[in-house]
Image 1 (cartoon, one colour):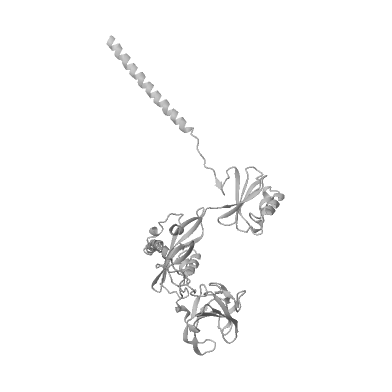
Image 2 (cartoon, rainbow, N blue to C red):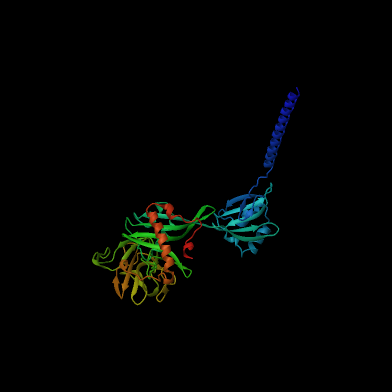
Length: 434
């Protein structure tokens, strides 16, 4: 009987211990759970224009036509005296008379039924803005949004024009202008043919994940009449330029053409039927058909030696002497650029006149002529000397850049876009040149 009681007591003791351990564990778990439940949730503040705006009502809008600063603020309990003070005392920060219709603005107002404005932020452009404080301490300061540069690619084939090749594929039309400027000395974009093709890598600019513009083209390949013409951006002595794969500058003494985006209507020939005179005679120039008023640019630096009008021939004309060898002529002009006269010094790419139809002409066009040692030569076949090449001390660094970029261009041509855009998102051409 004694042993039986002892066994029962041992059993009861084991049960009590087990129950105690269970209760202890449960209490500990509940305690941990309560502790977890009481951990405060961290709420990230809302930041706009480098300001925490959680304590304000945020009102955004766009400036409408004929709206001024007073129109935007008077409806939010801002005294006209304060508005006048902002306009007068902070012009050095931003002149409010330059507020433009269509630009974005933001008002930070009190969170109450009155909604008194405390700050007014005006976006000058995609990156720059100005903050006006409307509190007791009135002030104005400028701010700048971070611009992110992402490397993107473009490629295509010519069917009619470079412009159409870009826009047909949905690329920014400004890329056509950028590419034509890089190859302005080596490619005649009025004479490109169907089947010519291109690839290039460029910087796309983003602000707050929104595309806002085009940066620099860092490398390009343009296949022109079956020949690959490469362009690599490279800096030496803090000056950037474009060079081919051998380190020769793409810049030349003369541009390939005096117009942008037109077409050749008549070529250089020793025998051409004249549409007005109805006879065949030499045409020692190239006619560029373009709308009346289209800007005409000097293809190289030089001095204007002749300017005048010839009713029975070239109409309004200009002659520019570039050096002791080369002279160019521009005929049938509608008019001349301001300040252009005999003896005027002009630079490469400078505006000198406008396409017209003066003299013997059946329609608006530019008759462009090239003379070498006084003799007419075909402007389309003139080989212009290059500018300064990559210096010997920089050649090893340039070759590394050219090799890397050429591999990416070939990847684009092969359809491997990922390999060509393997740069980090915020990289720029400077990463390779400094």
